[in-house]
Length: 229
Length: 329
Ligand SMILES: [Zn+2]
Image (cartoon, rainbow over the protein chains, first blue to last red):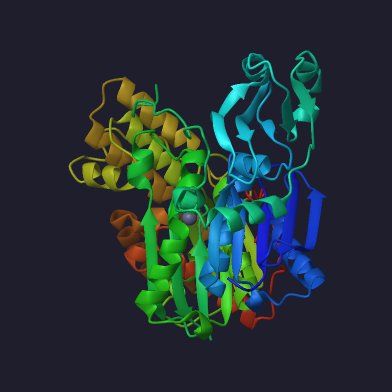
């Protein structure tokens, strides 16, 4: 795929749009802290990022978006736009598991724990082992967990764990109690989603990880009886 | 000009292709009713998830059925509200990105006003016209002088008419959605055996109220009344109220045509009786075909085209308007 890639991340309060060259080189990136405004600003931000990169919309070879986990509404805004770009432009599209992409962007070998704010004491989190050029190996699967118990769990490995994502800021005090936790970047980047997809699509084993179906990690609700009780 | 319409405000994922003279080239509705039946009503998060899964295939099917290529489109119209926030945002995000991708103008439309335009599918636009829109989410009486000049004459002060149907149906032990079930059961009942209290006009307004009726019906049921009789009496009372407000609106505006639309307009009993009564005063009743009385995207496209022709477009930062209260176009 020789043209530029458009990358969208709407999973957290920071909306991020990046344009990458086919080799993963960054052509443009815009990040905005815009809680509850993703629906309004996503398309104008795409427009702006493409202009910044000097890329025409019809020149986009592929588009990627964060398929989750993260804010349910945020994921849907990004994925709905992604499907519209595919339907409207005919470009290839990929949904990228955000936590895995964040881990795979880390240059240093070791344990990486991307964690995103959920409600109250919870975070969407996972634990990965990063080693060399291989895609990260999943140690604890992506799930909604209480931050303190997740912290206890990874501390048991007795090795340093690089914590990433906005839950690192929110739950800093809890993480500081662990001798393993190392605090890393709070804001994840759309460019990392694109680079992950560029790598992963070469590897057949991860191809189905790139579907555009949202990864909510939680059921929408539990059915009640038809009489409402 | 050909318009792609997109609707995702509640529990129907819909896409349609409509021409600027009102011909429906395709109208695809992916209903979620089965999905929500187990919950006894629409669950917002369930609805939003299903919209995302269904929207792109629904658009694709609508274009295919219409024999329209993306390059033939001249406009994208989308529901901006009112409706469920999460559900609306799926349709909006798709529509905006699609319009951007194809470099097409976008028009965001009001879902409730769009219901009135269902009556103009396959029919010419004619103004001025009164519109009585009654659905599960809304009951309003509008006067339309053009697509951009819509006046709210009256609205429900409490439950929407369709909501009252659903709640009474539940009390009578019927399933969801309640409208068709009450209509069926009412045919076996006698409306005079369990008469419900009339609803007095609310001051000098053309506003509606359905919550008192709903409660009265529920109380009759608890007191051991026959479900069929209560269903029949409930329908009569709803009709009486729709009629009294409509007649008053006709008197005040001198209108000679009324559109009756929204899910409640699919009720055959209400349709026929309303038409009968209005014929008596020389007013023409215009009702959408059954398939367009409930939520669909053809009506969204029809209103979008009318707005666009009148010079309106929406910016790509168009946001969702889940709640429009008090109701305005
Ligand atoms: Zn509706």
